Amino acid sequence: MGLCKGYGKRDVLSNINLSVEPGEVVGLIGRSGAGKSTLARCLVGLERPDKGKIYLDGQSILPGKGAARRRMQYLWQDPTQALSPYLTAENAVLETLNGFAIGAAGQRIGKATSLLEKLKIPREAQTRRPHSLSGGQCQRVALARALAAESDVLILDEPLSSLDLTTQINTVRLLRSIHASTGVTMLIVSHDLAPLRHLADRIAVLDGGRIVEAVAMARFEQDASHPLSRAYADVIRGQWTNS
Image (cartoon, rainbow, N blue to C red; front, side):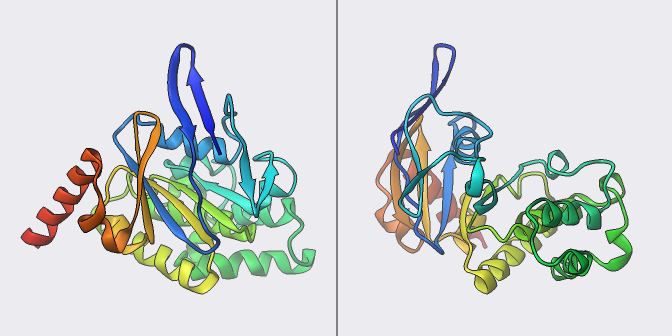
């Protein structure tokens, strides 16, 4: 709460107050350069805010430290940043399981294989390294790594931006399925409202380094009042009209 972050004399985040309820999916939208990724990175400890505190279950935490390191997982915009070029898909997930000592040691390979299969990574692809996988497959391996930690919160930074339309649609379906089966809390950063209408319970709008509005997705078109929110609503209305 009250998060502030700047680079030199430039303020990127100014007194950010954003709450996400357990099991909720919140979409965070805003213009390019609005600070969406900076906020996401602050929440998981990849950036350190200049001011403010971050809470998990009502307790102040140090992101990326202690139990919070496992309980809050971050999915990079470019999944190749999260994957070692030297590790196969299977070993990438196994690394998470071993790192957090999840499950019995002798069962972790089976758990990694099973998780990848659930995310539509076939057995023959599980022995490949990132350069031999498609962009969508790399995204799903990175997601499998995050899910392997059995975290409470997933923070997804532009998870669809580097994917083609077909893969975007499949990823949206996959995220919906994951949420339905696990109930994991999600904060999804996006510059595009369209895919979030199929995922998010609520939309938070970031503009000028501040959260200017937070509206239920089901009521966004009717209730959004900030000019930037209205612009997003107009785009969606046009897409629905033309579909």
